[in-house]
Image 1 (cartoon, rainbow, N blue to C red):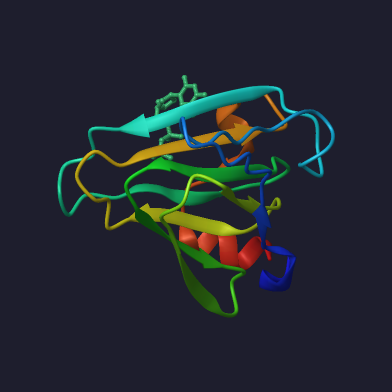
Image 2 (cartoon, rainbow, N blue to C red):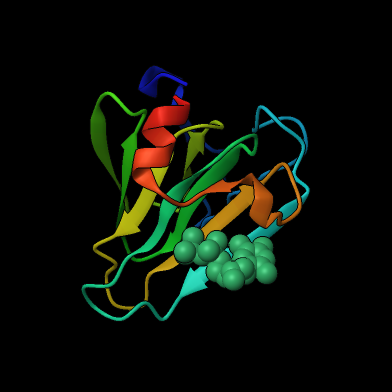
Length: 133
Ligand code: TYD
């Protein structure tokens, strides 16, 4: 999948003096129906998560708190996107290598995916990913 298929989605933002509110609702904001959500937190400084691609899973990554970088590769080129606002969702289609890194203190990464967890869907070796591409 080319990197141009990765999209930064601006999510609804209900501004309110009492505090702002954003949401995701099948199938309005996302190009897929959500089957699973998970979140990554308490990442020690300098550590990274991810570092794999999915054969068929698509996902949206949101920084609910703090900030982190998502490094993306389609096997040909690479780009880095910083997520630091809870009203942006980074849409990552299948067959994109992605790694989450540079987590700030108290960063909370929230991921909504279109499939249940399946280890068989992971490609964890970058050389194998490039071969498959
Ligand atoms: P993994 O996706 O490999 O984490 P990362 O991408 O940060 O390297 O998941 C780490 C472990 O957690 C792995 O052994 C499987 C388990 N896991 C689940 O059981 N369910 C899930 O939804 C996820 C995302 C992971």
